[in-house]
Structure formats: structure tokens, C-alpha cells
Amino acid sequence: MSKLIYSDLGRKSYESALVIQRRLLEEVKADENSPAYLLLLEHDPPVITLGRSAESEHLLASPERLEREGVEVHKSARGGDVTYHGPGQLVGYPIMQVASRGRSVHGYVRDLEEVLIRLLGRFGLKGRRRKGLTGVWVGDEKIAAIGVAVSRWVAWHGFALNVSTDLSHFDFIVPCGIDGCKVTSMEKLLASEVSIQEVKQQLVECLVEVFGFEPVGWNGAKRSPTSISTPSQPTSRGRFPVWLRRRIPPAGRSAEVRRLLADLKLETVCSSANCPNMSECFGRGTATFMILGNTCTRSCRFCAVPTGKPAMPRDDEPAAVAEASERLGLKHVVITSVTRDDLPDGGAGHFAKTIRAVQARLSQTTIEVLTPDFGGDEAAIDTVLAARPDVFNHNIETVPRLYSHVRPQARYKRSLDVLKYASSRLARGGAGRLGQSGAESHLPYANEQNAEQRWDSASLRPSLRKLFTKSGLMVGLGETIDEIRDVMRDLRKAGCNILTIGQYLAPSPEHVPIARFVEPSEFDAMRTEALAMGFTAVAAGPFVRSSYRAEEVLKKQAAL
Image 1 (cartoon, rainbow, N blue to C red):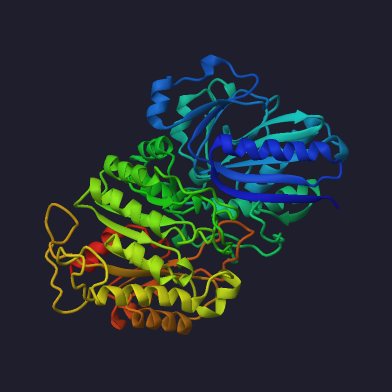
Image 2 (cartoon, rainbow, N blue to C red; image 1 turned 135 degrees about the horizontal axis):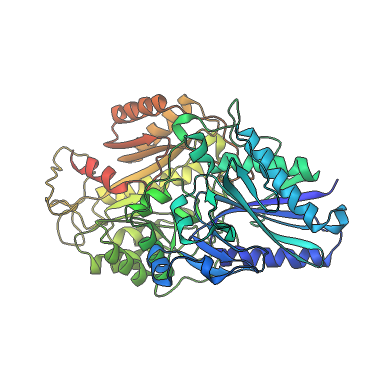
């Protein structure tokens, strides 16, 4: 049985995915015994692609309109006419030998249609072909497009399935060059939210059935391959529970945010880590900036950020973050980073430069940093604190028992010590802008009774400034409620003021699988217990992430 090596790329631009496709294409062409590959992704920013048969009049929107909407346009080597790709649409790029499997190119395309028809059937939808046309329809509406290219009998490019796509973007084109063609999506037909992650899992299984592959996981980050035999979304029907299904929010300022990030060449944890809240946050005109590149020196098994050898930090990045914060009109700026064990200070100096650059432009904006553990280096922590952010956040992530499995290069005690040291420095007045103006101003714990907060109505910044410590915890990895309570107690002993608790969602089938889905009522109970332990602000819920609506969480903290 030949192997299928599949990779979940999350959200990728068209050009970056094309680079990966071409590399794999050359590999398969060079070796007749090469395994087949499957890349699964959503294209972000949105893109219109023009196939070899595309006619210019099938692109209906003007270049100016597309630029305003943040939609790119690219010519493609695939067959077919014009189509649209964007968030909420599952794109699959199989790269495989066609002739060696006894298939013609026509037969290969029919097999891809069969994969999609079987997939739709698993969700109770009846997909069908239309005579003389390529793709898959439900009723009279097209739900999936197929466009392939073949080089020396190796097929590449592939298919696009509308899962929860913003269908209004198809108004920019004549879909697939078919006059009067109507399009639909799984979410529209089912009248309920559909998780693209669960569709990916079912898609791989259907492709394996049709093509007769042995599936092997791969993500290009030098992690060990894993089989898909154990679903990463363990419910009785293989679907997300109802509380984890939601519609894609209105586009809002999404196009503006994407253009700005692209112009300034900035990374966000939102896109790099496949955050489920990205569309909502971008739509509201917010983002969590990720400095020091998008390649991590560690390989945590819950995280979608790739592992490898990072590039040197950009000298102009602090100024770029400050400019982006100003242009977006942010009242609260969140700055995080990959772990940089390759740098002498772990990137602490770059954090400090970025904090100060934002402060220089936006004196009334609060700043939150979400830092790595810096290898436990207290001097590095001092460097960050000396720049005087308003919130120092370091995520504990999970319970001690699961560290070796989930965070093999991290240590539970080291993360606690980072928070404890930051809190103790603040208590001794060793860092921070909050309070008096001198560098040695006394900075008591944020929840001391004499630390009365008075909030200015025009901005988030309090007139009596304090620095808060914060941490985040994922649940659904196999921990027990008693282990969660122990972690909360440890965080309070370390001086942590603010806590976030959210549902772990595996970025791909290759990552640590979800052990269970935590119900909303359980999050409510955890929040109540955390407040009773002395945390002064707690955000707990299925979609909560450490920087999700961070400004609102800080407001709740400061109102105490």
C-alpha cells in the first residue's frame, strides 16, 4: 500500500502555499517511489486565481475594489477558469503520480469528485456531478471546485470546498466561468456552524478510502509522523459539540488589518497559531503582534507555530509594531513572541525595544506582553519589566503531569518561577511604570486594598498605574479538575492576578489530540473557584485565549 503524507498548513497565503507545492512536485517527479502528499489549508489573505482557461471578463470587480477588500489576484498553472479562495474554504492540494496508479487525468479528477461527494455524505449532504462540468454540486448550487495541473504525470493543485465561506466574495467573479452559476457552502445548507477542523479529518479519511493510501501525518516541522487512526475531535459522531460551532463574524475591519500587517511585514499569533478567534479580532480591528519571527526553537505538541532555525530579529520591527498600533487606534496592545532559545537574552531586549517604541507613539495606550520563559533567566525578565509594560503574562499552559507530553522542552516549575519572580520584583518596586514616576517607584501587588484604581473616562489607562501578572491554562488535554485546582493555587502563590482558561483545540491531526470537550457550565464553575482563590480577573470559556479580548479583561481587573 502506498503512503499519503498529509499536512495541515492552517491559513497560508496563496504564494507561500505555492512554494511548498512546487518543492513537493519536484520531489515526486524525481522519485517514482515517492509517497503522495496532501496539503490542507485555508487561503488568507483571500485570493482570486485565474486558471489557464480564464477569460478577463469573468473577473467582475475592479482592481481598486479588490484592493479595498484585501483580495489578491494570481494567475495559476491549473486548468479551469476563475475561482475564489478565502477563510472558511477548505483547499486541498494533492501532489501524486497519476499514471503509476493506473489512472488517466480524467479519472483522477473524477476520483477527487468522489472524495468530496463521500465527504459531504458524512455530513448528511447529497453531492453530485453535473454532465460536462468539473466539480461538485448540491442541488443546483456548486459547493466545490476542482482545478489540477499535471507535470510529467504528477498531478498538483487540487480542490476547494466551501465550508463556512463568505459567499458574497463570489460576486467578484463569474464562478468557474459558468454563467449563472450559483454557489453554496456546507454551513448554509446545514443551517448551522461547521468546524473546518472536523471537515479536514473526514476529508483525509475519504481520500484514503478512494485512493487506497496508507495515511501518515507530517507538518514540515520535524515532528514525528502520526497516524490519523485516532480522531483529534473525539465526539460520538466525530463532530464538534454545539457550543464550539459558530458563524464567521462580519468582515468589519479584516481587510484593513490584513493589508496593514502585510505592508509592515508583521506577524501575528492569530494567524501563525491558527487561532479560532482571528476573524472576530481582525474584524474588530485588533491583533496580537508576534515579534522575533514566526519560527520557534521549541516544538510544543499543542502549537501550530513551526519549529526550526529562526532568522535574526528585525531591527525595524519595534517601530513597525508601534506604527501598526497607532494606525489601528489600539487602546491596548498585546505583544508576544516565539521562543528564541538561540538568542543570549531569549529576545528580552527586543521585547523591551518594542514596548518603548509603542509607548513613544501612544502614551495613553496600555501594553500587555505574553513572554516565553526565557530559560528562567531573571536578568531577561528584568529587561522586560524595566520597559514597564502594564501586564506581564506568561502562560502555564497545562498541568504538571502533562508537561513532558505537551511541552517537552518546558518545565512547570520554571514557568511558575517566572511569574513568581516578576511578581516579587513588582512588589519590591523593581520595575514598572505604574504608580509614581521614578524608576524605583514602589509597585505593590495589584490587588492590595490600598491600591485604589481610578479610571479616566477617555482611555483605558488608570490614573494610578499598576502592573498586573497574568497566566493562561488550556483544558481538554486529559487533566483532572483536582489538577486544575492545584495549578490555580500554584499561580496564586506565585502572585498571579489574572487568569484565562480555554478549550484546547488541536491545530491539526498531527498535534496532541483533544481528550475531551469541556462544557460551558464547567468553565463557569472554574471561573467561580478561581475568583474565590483570590484571582481578581478571570476569563473562562471554550473560545478564551490568553490575549482574547485582553483589553476587556484588564478593565475588569482595574475596576476592582
